[in-house]
Structures are given as C-alpha cells and as structure tokens.
Amino acid sequence: MKEPNSPDSPLADLCRQRGLKLTGQRRTIAFVLSDSDDHPDVEELYRRAVEVDPRISIATVYRTVRLFEENGILQRRDFGGGRARYEVADGDHGDHYHLIDADTGKVIEFENTELDSLLEGIVRQMGYDLVTTRLSVVGRRKAKPRSRG
Amino acid sequence: MKEPNSPDSPLADLCRQRGLKLTGQRRTIAFVLSDSDDHPDVEELYRRAVEVDPRISIATVYRTVRLFEENGILQRRDFGGGRARYEVADGDHGDHYHLIDADTGKVIEFENTELDSLLEGIVRQMGYDLVTTRLSVVGRRKAKPRSRG
DNA sequence: GTGATAATGAGAAAGATTATCATTTGCAAT
DNA sequence: ATTGCAAATGATAATCTTTCTCATTATCAC
Ligand SMILES: [Mn+2]
Ligand SMILES: [Mn+2]
Ligand SMILES: [Zn+2]
Ligand SMILES: [Zn+2]
Image (tube, rainbow over all chains, first blue to last red; front, side, top):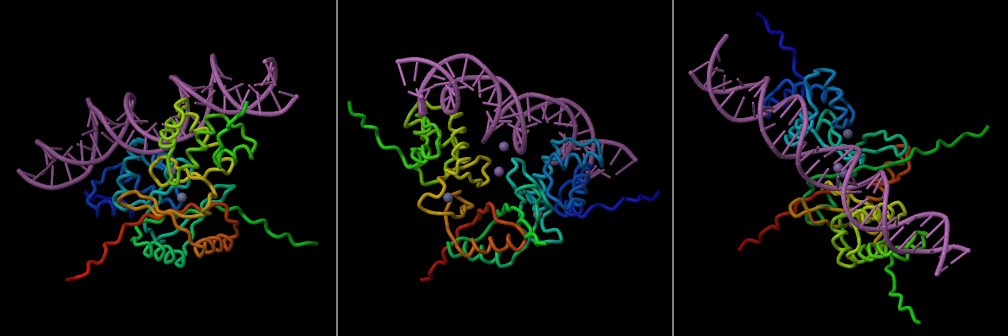
C-alpha cells in the first residue's frame, strides 16, 4: 500500500528540523504561513487555517505562532494596530523594514544596507551589540505633480 | 486678598495655550510629566500623580495622556512591554531614538542626524512623505575587553 | 455668583493574549 | 501494529491594558 504522503510545506519541514512535534494543526498553520506573503495577525491566520482544516482552534493558532517565534521560524511585527502580526523569518528575502501607508494601512517592505550598517555602527559606538532593530516608518503618498495643460 | 497662584509647570502652560480646560487633575499630571525625564507608563504616572494629589483616578490618567498626545504635548512610545509609555514631546531635546538594554530594560536615548536624513530620503524615494518614524533598537552591552596582566 | 458644558471617579466593558484542564494525539519503544 | 506516555489541543476562563458609561463634580465665560 503506497502512502502518497503529500509533501509538507517548507515551514513544516523546518518544524521537524527543530524537533518540534508535527501535529495536524501545526502542519496546517505552517502551510498557511508558507502560503502567505503578507503580514497577517492571528485572527487572519485562523481564518486561513480553518479553510484548510476546520478542526483547529484559535487557541492553537496563538500557541503555534508563539512556538514558531520562539524557534526563530516566525517574526512578530508591531505595526501599531493593537494586534501582533507575523511573517516567515528569513524566507527568500532577508531582513527588511516596513513602510506603512498612513491612509490605507498598506504595508510596503524595503531593504537598505546603508541603514543596516548605520544602525549597527551607532549601537556599537554606544558600547552595545545590536540584538534587534524595531523599525517601521509611516508615510503619506506624495501628490503626483500634475502636468499642466 | 493676594492669590499666590503657585506657578504652573511648563506643560500646564502648554495646556492652557491649546485652549484645554485646566483642571486640578490635569495640572497635577502635567506637573508630574514635566518633572519626569524617563519614559513612564500609565501605571507609573498614576503612582507619581497620586503622591502629588491623591484625589485622582487612573481613568483620568488614561484620558489625559490620550488628550495630551492628540494635542502634540506628549509622545507615545512602544518599547514592547505591552503597555504604552510616554514622554514630553519636543522638550529641550528634539526628536530622538531609543536603545533598549536587552538585559536590564534600561532605555538610552540617542540622536543621529545621518539616520534622520537617511530615513527621510528612503521614504521620499519610495514616493512618500515621512509622517512618523517608529524606531527602537535592542542591544546587549559589549563585554569590556579585559586588559591582561 | 450662575449656568452651561466639560471633566472626573468608579466600575463595567472591550479587545488581545495567556492559562487551565479534561481529552486527544503524536511518536518512540516494544 | 500495539501500547504508553508526554505533549498538544479545544473550549473557555482568566488576565492585562485600555476605553466606555453614567451619575456627580468642577471649570470658566458671562
Ligand atoms: Mn504594541
Ligand atoms: Mn493589549
Ligand atoms: Zn515584512
Ligand atoms: Zn525618549
């Protein structure tokens, strides 16, 4: 009897690599996260997870994102909406920062090595090793200069 | 009959300038804030305020910091402890950033004009006007290199 | 001083997250 | 494959921070 054994998501594999017990719920949440390229909060993750497997509870989503964060699989973000938001750590794109559109709330990612090293240097000069950078900028779209005529 | 009229704190004066009704509680909270040079949360502000005037409630402290923030008198900070922290806006020292000691939680302020303009430029290049920068770095004190001998 | 209006105090309510505990499940050893 | 046990889950209560409600009180322009 063959076991098709549908391939696990990249995050589920990571889960196993870290020696975490791979339950059905964790597999589902890992899949949902691998499938996301935005910054969902727990409620949104729960909605997406339930569509894959309805036998999942929001408590487990809370527990799982915490577990994944503690194991370096997820990164928690705070964009000021009162709820934590999550994204996969070190996916394809490395460390990055976030620009939040003041009017729409849209999150735009950006990288900047000059910023990386400037922060690194500032902190070192103060006698510290940089552990974490929490940075997000809020911006308002510039009015496009209207061509006359 | 003379009215000694003990001089108000700088923040209480600001309060009046903005046309806000100057109640005893607001005067007390304004004084406590003017008197602080750290980043207290609401509970801590309440503790300090009660020592000045016991007839104050924590609800009023919450209301007042919100009011002051909406009027540009206070700045709200998020250092990740789950509660908002506050400091006077534009006191003597202008805009600044915060380094949090990973081990002690101590908050160290710093300014850096290169960082200011780099962020400004990055955001502009993305087609936005910078509205707010939320930045705090977490660092760990470097082990002092021990001189041999 | 009076009165309209806004602020306050006490506690309820809201919203996000964590804890509890009985039940279920993964998984390692047999 | 079965068994056994530690760990995970679901449902819900508890916690924590902040906001809201509403009856009472205080501010301030007149
Ligand atoms: Mn926060
Ligand atoms: Mn909260
Ligand atoms: Zn991101
Ligand atoms: Zn500061």
